[in-house]
Image 1: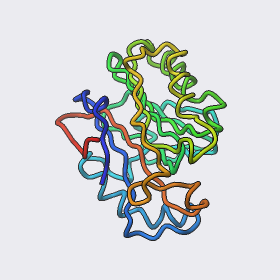
Image 2: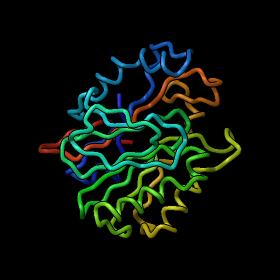
Image 3: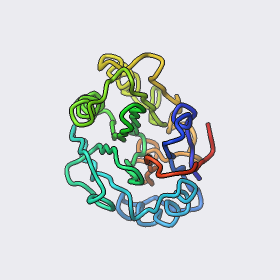
Length: 226
């Protein structure tokens, strides 16, 4: 099952979704094993988006500030030392994995370019989201005032001592994104263990959500709007 977000769903050229927890799958194990156990869940959840799991382009997520521009030759690749990916190619799904950290989707509807970024406390301190905005400006000639930002569910106070979600939003405004185009779902991943994975609550042994975005080649695809 996936969540979709109204601000992103307003773009008919964009397919997106946040893969939710499957309570029936035991993920009380180390990260790699948990992700392996979730493969069929991911595959089934991505079908409404017309996305094949094997096509995802993503980073290995080491809490860096590195964002890579990707193209069709990167299909199905895990990029080393990378915490954000961006593209302007149709039909190429990009993704990040999170379990408390922020999954940030950036859309430039003018240049038809998108990015997804993994930004927890460390990534936020390293300014990875404004860095991604700057890289889209450099690579796609994007204008920050055209961009839309969506922050997915992440951990928040009082469950976590650092409000990196608020900082991400402030950083986007500082980078030139218009206030009306910065969106936060406002959900705390530590507050609903039936729906969300939480690294903090489950002491490191839990699953991972996928945040996926893709520029569609044609047609519409959907999910469960929240």
